[in-house]
Amino acid sequence: MILVQFSQNDSLFLADLTPYADIWHDYHIEILDIVSKKEKASVYYHWEGSREEGGPVFHFYAMELIYYYKKTELIYKIETLWSEKQFRDQFK
Image (cartoon, rainbow, N blue to C red):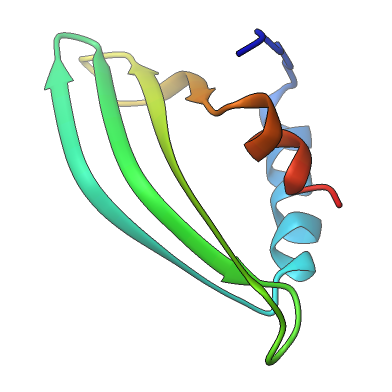
């Protein structure tokens, strides 16, 4: 695995969510486990989706580390753990 870091402000993050969702015809996320301690939560999930009706279905497992302020529960950072192949495949 390699470390790829990407940072953006909240407005750009929200703006990127819409085009990303438009790429996928259908997708499903199943949360497999959540572990929370102090100001960090780890979310382990299985994601599957297809870009077109009847098209190939992509599957991957990933873990998100979500950092939040305990008092307000506002998220200030998200780290996603994917293999390089999983990361690159989503842009093909």
